[in-house]
Length: 161
Image (cartoon, rainbow, N blue to C red; front, side):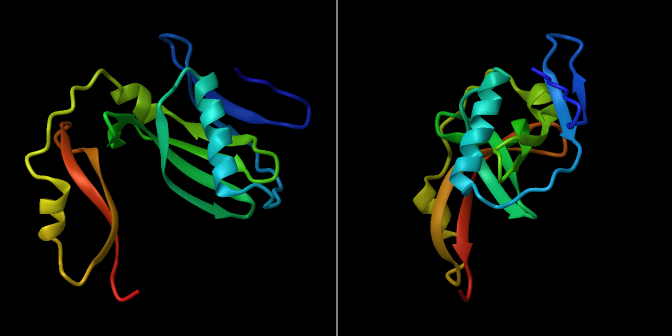
């Protein structure tokens, strides 16, 4: 869905096959910081659902100048699928989507069979440096330079606070 009003200017690309919204950029808007990160992620999910994209989770977010940049990725069997990353920018005052890019999602999304990992998360933590304080970990699928995908673990850790 694309709306244009007199006070909003936007550019977008629609896919030739299927008529899907591939990307969109609205003109810069002044934004205040009223909404929380969780509220912005909720607005992002609502927008993605309106585009027919379901089952995504926020994998990274940062705010600046009243805007929240959010990277969303699909999950398959609790595995984050990074090759299908979707990028959004949310107005933290209104919840409006200021920009959206689903190019990687539409280029890479397909039915995936996630194999069991060769090593457990505990075994993987054991090979990390003892200097790291691991706070969480999860499985993910990452793209490789050769165009393949690799199942791995990613960890959030700290070092020296």
